[in-house]
Amino acid sequence: MTKDNAKDNLMEKIVSLCKRRGFVFPSSEIYGGVGGVWDFGPMGVLLKNNIKNLWWKKFVQHRNDIVGLDGSIIMNPTVWKASGHIESFTDPLVECRNCHSRYREDHLIDGRYVGEGKAKKKNQCPNCGKVEFTNPRNFNMMFQTHIGPAEDTSSITYLRPETAQSMFTDFKQILEISRKKLSFGIAQIGKAFRNEITYGNFFFRSREFEQMEIEYFVKPGTDEKWFTYWLSEWKKFIVELGINKNKLRFYEHPKESLSHYSKRTVDIEYEFTFGWSELTGTANRTDYDLRQHEKFSGRDLTYFDEENAKRYHPFVIEPTMGVDRMMLAVLIDAYDENKEGEVFLRLDPKISPIKAAIMPLVKKEKLPEIAQEIFNELKEYWFVQYDDGGSIGRRYRRQDEIGTPFCITVDFETPKNQSVTIRHRDSMKQERIKIKDIKCFIEEKLK
Ligand code: ATP
Image 1 (tube, rainbow, N blue to C red):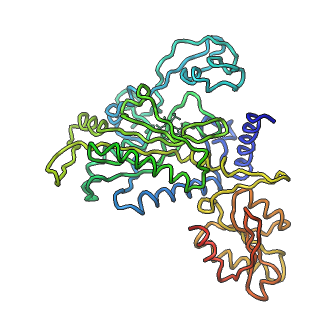
Image 2: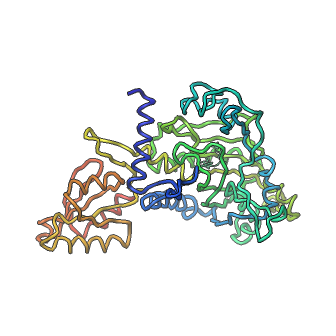
Image 3: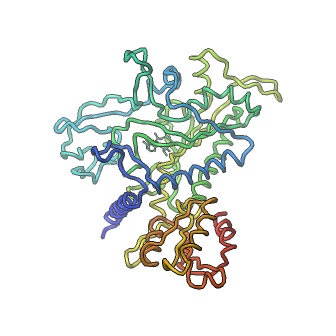
C-alpha cells in the first residue's frame, strides 16, 4: 500500500469508527444529511466536553488575568459592519463552465483538490476534470438570517462567524465589572458558523463548529512579547492533550495574505491524514477591533492606564482554536490497530470519554452486585460504564475502541478479599488492587 493510500484508509477507518461507536455522524442523516454539518454522539460529546473543560480549567479557572464570557450567536448587525466581516469575510468563488460545480479559486490554485475525483492536477475541476472556470466573485461566508417577523433588508442579521466580536463589544463592561488591569483577557467557547464553499475532510472544515478563543488585551508596544507567549501556551496545551509534538509545526502567514485586522498571524498546523493543515491560529489584531467598534457605536472603548496616567486603545492578541479540529487531530493521533486488526484509541486518560469500565466476570455468585456497587461509587466522579455483556475479551475490545484506559474486573477472588483486577488499555497489563483504592488509583492516573 502506498503512503497516500494508507492515509486515505486511516481516515476511512476513523470515519467508520466514529459512526459505529457514536463519536460523530452526519446531522439529520435520515433526510440525507446536510453538507458540512455534524452531530456528536454519546462518545463524541464526552470527548469534546473533556477537551473544552481542560481548556477552560487551564486558561480561565487557573488564571487570575482571564475571565469567561458566553456571548450571543446573533448580534446587532452593525457589529459585522464595524468588524469588517460584511465587506471582507469572503472567499473567491468560481464555477466550472462545463458542469457548474462551485469551488474556492484559491484552493484550485494551490492544488488542495488534487486527488479528489477527476482532479489530477492543479486548476482541474474535481467533478468533470475540465479546466474552464468563471471569473471569481467574492462570496460572503456569513449565514444571513432575519430578526423579527418582517423579512426585509432592515431585519437582516447574521450567525456569528467567530466568537471574538462579543469580547470586543463587551470589553469595557467586563473590564469594569471584573476590576482587572492590563494585561487581561476574555475567554469564550462557543459555536461559530461559516457557509464554507467547500467543506470536507470529515469534520475538519464544517459549516457549524465550535471555537475556543481568548482576546488578550495588552499595552501597545508589549504586543510582540505577548504574541510569542500565547503561541507557546497554545502549543503546550495541544501537547498536553496527548498530541504527538512531531506532527505539529508553525506556519507564519505572509504579510500579503493577512486578514484585514491582523498585523501578524501564526498558525499551528497538524499533519492530518490529508496533509499539514491549520489546527489553531494566533493573531495580533492590534487595536483594530476596539477602534472600529468605537467609531460605529460612538462609545468610548479606551483604557485608562493609571500607572502612566495615559488613555489608549489596548492591542489585542487573539489565540484561537477549533474544538472540532482539535478533536479530529486527537482521534487521528490516538488511532491504532494491533496485528489482529483490533482497534485501540490511545487517548490520554484525561480526555477519554469513559474513564473506566466495571465488569463482573460472570453474572452469578454476587459478582454483578459488587460490580454495580463499584460503578455507583465511581459514577459520582467520572463517566464510567457497567458492562456485563459477552466474553471478557470482547468487553475489553469494545472499551479499547472508545479509548477507555482502565477495565476493572470483579472476579471470584473479589468476594473473598475485596480486590479487583485493573487492566490497562495500552500495556494490557493487569494488576490487583483493593476496591477501596480504586478511586485514588484513577485520580492519580488522571493527574
Ligand atoms: P481556514 O484557513 O482553515 O479556513 P481560518 O484561518 O479561517 O481557517 P480562523 O478564522 O483563524 O480560521 O478560526 C480559528 C479556528 O477555528 C481555526 O484555527 C480552526 O481551528 C477553527 N475553524 C475555522 N474554520 C473552521 C471550519 N470551517 N470548520 C471547523 N473549524 C474551523
